[in-house]
Image (cartoon, rainbow, N blue to C red; front, side, top):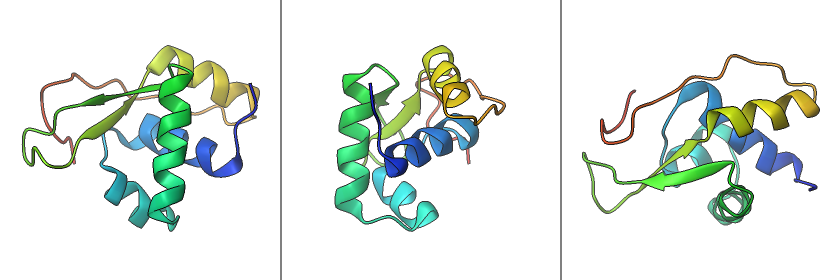
Length: 94
């Protein structure tokens, strides 16, 4: 599996900050919305993140990193970082 730099950045942000909308990811990482959407599709395909309902705004889903898988991949890319676990259904943790 080969992931682009922007896809890895999105995964790291989800893994360390927590659930985020694509719009938040785009803003925080200064990445084009289209690039974020593509990155999220790739991450979901490889089971590195999943989509959950945003109880604060149902129009904007939240994306959450799968902690175990994310940590393995981030270590592979030399980004050994603390992965935060979040409970789905709690809405945004920010």
